[in-house]
Image 1 (cartoon, rainbow, N blue to C red):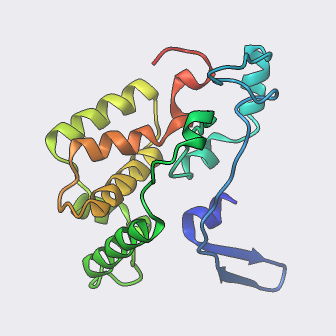
Image 2 (image 1 turned 180 degrees about the horizontal axis):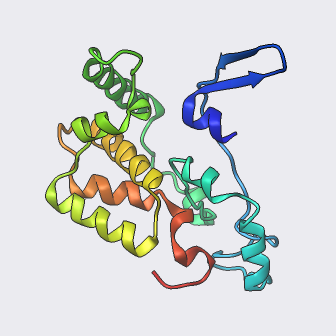
Length: 197
């Protein structure tokens, strides 16, 4: 799973030959926060102990988690929100923003062979197109040190921050884009299993 996520190809080797197949895909996965399913729930108490939660989370390797760009904890929706008649943002408006951001990325990478979107950026392209401003770089440094994140997580944060900026039609990656991208690395946070961040 790790190699296709990273390289976007699957290599198959046998005694007499080896071959490669394209494997550019989007991984979408979900899991409970703990064996009982209630860790972090605002109204129901988790009955798992720390060992059970840690053992449960250790089933997903760190290298695989590093390759997942967005790690979001979804809280339950309360009745008032579900029954609210206030209209949300229509899907058509969101779709238009996404299309505009993808077109912006296609224009950005038109001279970069094989690169069509932010997710495909190499480290050198990250420095060219996703370098944050000074305040953003300082916030990223602080988060990397406090959360003990890997170099791969650093690259992923910059790619997500660049995409957030594109959705805002912002030419530069600013500190609030970096902070939002860091917020999407939920499973990197030491608080996830009870320590303080």
